[in-house]
Amino acid sequence: MLANHPLLGPVLALALWTHVMWGWLYATRLPAIVRARMRMDPTLPRGAQMAELPARVRWKADNYNHLMEQPTVFYAVALAMALMGDTSMIDIWLAWAYVAIRVVHSLWQALINDIPKRFALFTLSAVALVALTVRALMLLLG
Image (cartoon, rainbow, N blue to C red; front, side, top):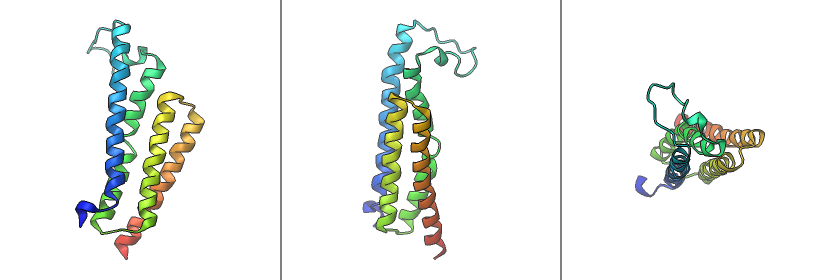
């Protein structure tokens, strides 16, 4: 039954984490805007005003944006696998590994933002996602 499919856990966990990052983004951005006494000017180029905020504030927004990029492929692949009835433990572990690495990536970017280490985390998550995608194609093609 799809309602209890084990691949839905990682999908919903990453969706929930995205909401956490959204909350963290505004919990830091709004006070920074008030402290800077910024006036929202719609005539400025996209991102110009936010670039005035401290880097530690912008990192949360940057990560939230990243959670709208590659993870969309994860959602599609994991949901496709669930619809195909995949219950392979390796696929479930790959999905959870992807989510766990993305959470660590988020925390790293939001708190430290050492780019070479962040890129290593991104690469690890990408490898897990590519493996999951290849396995989904193999399942589809029989």
